[in-house]
Image 1 (cartoon, rainbow, N blue to C red):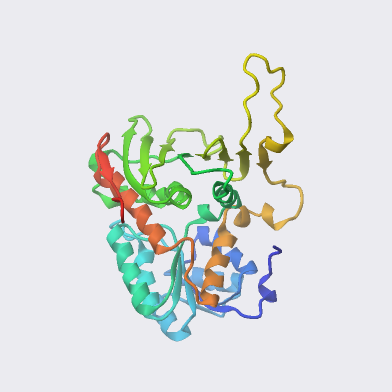
Image 2 (spheres, helix red, strand yellow):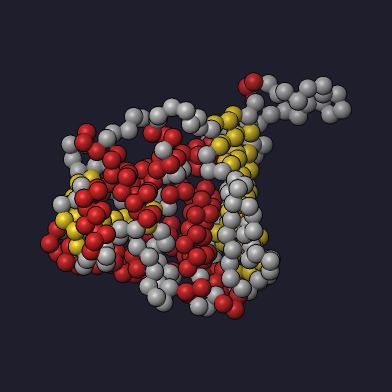
Length: 362
């Protein structure tokens, strides 16, 4: 479906933005070119930075106090991209509560919070105030991951039975994990592979992991409530010059692979050639693998990283949900809660031990 430009929308959300950092400058503010938003104000503790961003992105006002901005501007929705408190807690969590109490819907960058209990607090407030909260789980909005989900949902693929996810991330030694300030890097990044795993396979029942002492990488065994199994391979120590990520899901005689977040290969059901007699590896066209990857020669929107990395799709999903009065279906607080359960399992479970994350029936 062709993408609309901002000026082509008849109905727009009145939006305020809290945060004027490098990530938001590169990846979030530019999405508004393609979303139904009217950016009216920007807030940052650095007033000069807020004013600069307001000029750059067309907002009329700049603030250094988000509560003052919420009271004066009364936005329909608020976007929050901030950092961490000195104790390691997530600043956006507290700001999101303020925005909900001010009557605004909330889009917030991950991580949503630093504990499952804080996510539950957001869930209660969201329900009480009748306002939506969505977290920027960009990975589930990757066109490649969305295509993998579509393939997995087809009757031909069968029941997803196992998953492998590769992601370059380390984790501190177990004795250091009680200090939240030493866990912010892991908290910041576990949202990426965990969101893919939850989106594609559902709730995790239990997990256990082994950690290598050289780079802090881990291999985690997962069993899902569905009965499927999985592996999360956090490849700390791998070269940054190599493809960073890999995803593979196995079905029934089929499997789908996503390499580097953009290349999708679907290996369809195919008959095994006569063993010891087959002279060619070429299978029938009707069962040959299907492969998708982008070209980077044309000036298409899909060649922009804010599209193939999911930023525009996630912002559009939030805006369209708010305008329709329907809760977002992806990036929900329920999704964030499952990610936080996994984070807390790593934080509280020693290497080699098993952690129960969800019981059947939950």
